[in-house]
Amino acid sequence: MAETLLTLETLSDKAAQVLSRLQSHRQRLVTAESCTGGLIAALLTAHAGSSEMIEGGLVTYSNVLKQAVLDVATKTLAEHGAVSEPVAVEMAMGALACAEDATISVAVTGIAGPGGGSETKPVGTVCLCLMHGTKNPVHETAFFPGDREAVRLATVNRAFDLILNAL
Image 1 (cartoon, rainbow, N blue to C red):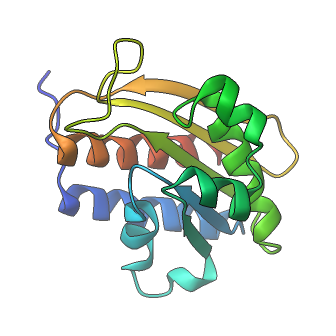
Image 2 (image 1 turned 180 degrees about the horizontal axis):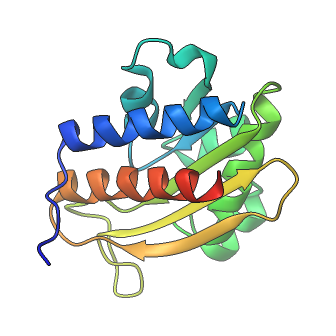
């Protein structure tokens, strides 16, 4: 079975599915994005009427903003690094705390490349977390091969999958 090529167009279609599911479940989403630079929120809010389901998006590229805006602990960053599941979890929790009307959050932090990778965290390593109200966070580390665009698109796709699977 051939893998579907990810494009902005296919992700826009998937964003419409996410919005429909959020609407049918009466949920509001907030995003906390690092490696995607706001692409998750941008694809969702490109659709008319998305303001009913999207609370907002926070792009926290630097560790300083992760700490100041999302309340990611200095200790967590020091012990695990910015690209880690514990940081993704704290980003998702912080996003929900920032957005009083949001009921669900998704957070992503990773290394899109072409530089910045290491032996233990190569380019393409991405950590994601979904928080749905008071339920336990769903978090994972994924590896997406390819160039910067491919990593970013694959991250958005996986974030959309996490949202769809939660609803």
